[in-house]
Amino acid sequence: MTLRNPEVQSISAFFPCYNDEFAIPIMVRAARSALLDSVDEFEIIVVDDGSSDGSVAALEGLREEVPELTIVRHTTNRGYGGALISGFGASTKQWIFYTDGDAQYDASELVRCIDAVQSNTDVVQGWKMQRGDPWYRKVIGRTYHHVVRVLFNLHVRDTDCDFRLIRATLMSRVPLTSTSGVICVEMMRKFEKAGAKFVEVGVSHRGRPYGRSQFFRLPAIARSAAQLIGLWWRLVARRGRVPSMNSATTAGSEPNRTIPQ
Image 1 (spheres, rainbow, N blue to C red):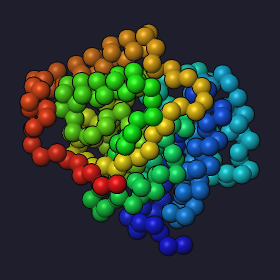
Image 2: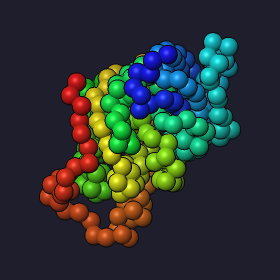
Image 3: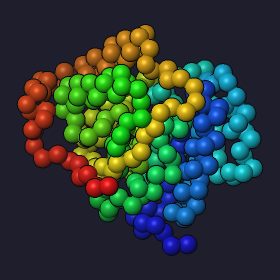
């Protein structure tokens, strides 16, 4: 076959899954359809993070239809970061793509990431063109983004957009340790400090079609805040002073390039 982009020959696509019984088959099928026409080799990995619904049964039912599927099972819930760490660890191809398993993102749009890769690209980072959530989630999401952007001196347009294509050699140099949702901040901070070259692409985002988010509840938000403070202490406070608001927004040349949509 003719590669969609000669820079991308093989991809490991993985999805963290927690009680996504109805959404995860949609994601797996969409990813497979896109990858069949784009790369020479691929694998699809789903990390089931201790689901209590029918997610595992739904995935087992896909094995014959999707021979490229591998299921990684956690017997107990390890948290979002724990699921991502397992997914990265199970990936074996040249590039690693991941997004959430709840079908808020369209997995077929990973072709946008493939098209954006150039010879020096390390990370293709998505940004939500329009967030498909209730207004209060939009407010919380943007507030979170601006807070972590300042605290961690990040330059990406949308820190909490979990739609990423990452060169596997970069992942091998950047160990991740966070087991909660703050792993995305850890990832972006460590990638930027490692000198990774970013490209950014706009992606679609819709309301959650099934189930209910586990994050937007007061106890979960409180835990995430505490974990974020701990991460800031480890990655920023111990290694230099906190950037001011002005320095965070104007410091140096940004390592990203946005692809117009």
